[in-house]
Length: 297
Image (cartoon, rainbow, N blue to C red; front, side, top):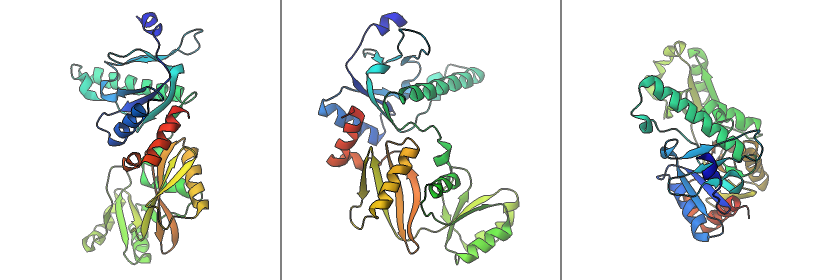
């Protein structure tokens, strides 16, 4: 079966991997397809692994890796010019017939295979975006720490389990503070009067405190070697835009955004987005730049 599939070949192509409901991926897939310069192939991640065959040989002479999608010719790794994805997951709904222990095994093995797949493709193709160190942008404190390490000024923040330190931080900012749990999923909310009475509970678990957002935002959208600023007026200095590009490349982010805020303290980097917003691919200049990057133009 493997040899039979491997004998079939298609032209150089751009591979999209993700959910069909992802607006940005869908818009960019349609743009690449309609340009007609490279075939565009969309692998719907919810169908992996049961409906998508994967062959990933290493150290085997004259054996090439490939993906085989339902109803499509096998796609040889060497024919993949570019890959576009916004993270990936393994849909447990594909394993509903398995018992819990087998489900955990299937998910773990499928996840490991995807990690290996995109790590392999990133050696020979533009993979936008292959995030080898995803934890750096999965947690707010790590994100700000990394941005500061890239030379950006960032919002003042404090993660603490000390009620005393939390009170001093809040007072130093005249109460203009937002807070959340340290883990990635929680949403910031402003400090309210009754929150002060609960600060003693920090002894049981730390929380993340941050100066409240102030000032207008600008999105520095990085696509390959180009930087676009949204909205376009009152753009940050070019030196700062170049720093945004360097920050993205340091994370192997070929297409992403650094969110800047023009605060009373100057330009602050308030976030790193690992995939551009869908509005970027509606714009012809940015959409064509992204398509050309994936096509290898």
